[in-house]
Image 1: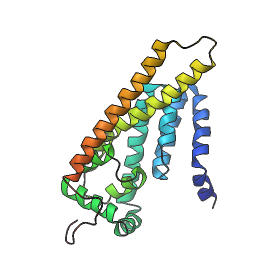
Image 2: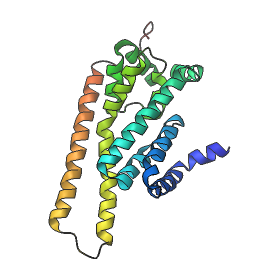
Image 3: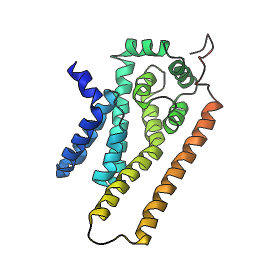
Length: 222
């Protein structure tokens, strides 16, 4: 019950954790990565952490730390799904046509589908890590495909978080913000969102050519 209560109030707890990370100095990145791994294992959405990384660490460092944390967390969940929690994950797949379709597609095309699904999150990130553990995809290929596929979305969320903090600092400053500064921030945000959306659309189209996630796979496959 305590764990359930914590999970229901996860956003507030994650925000508090980010404030704590911001006060840790050199240990902040290490703790942040550790928290991200735990969030992946517990299947808690990590968007708040990713936005917070931009606010706490800036775009470059925030992207690096989030990329490391999300990849390690996804790998940990993958290994749990492949070994310790295999029966539980199988039960989830059997009751979800969408997850069954993912299982079948990854079994057929391997890390390529993992890469495309990471860029076009048609399946929730939290449970997909465990589902991939059921497939025959090799660990090394899974890690590389996950890492590369998550980079566009990571950059967008981190940039938004960094921009939010920067705008808050400018708003609190005594000097006014010049039109050139506002233009730079807005143009940067628009460019980041457009690039990420474009990548997602391309990935979604590629997925549609390979597998339908709206209907259960045909019998005899997977």
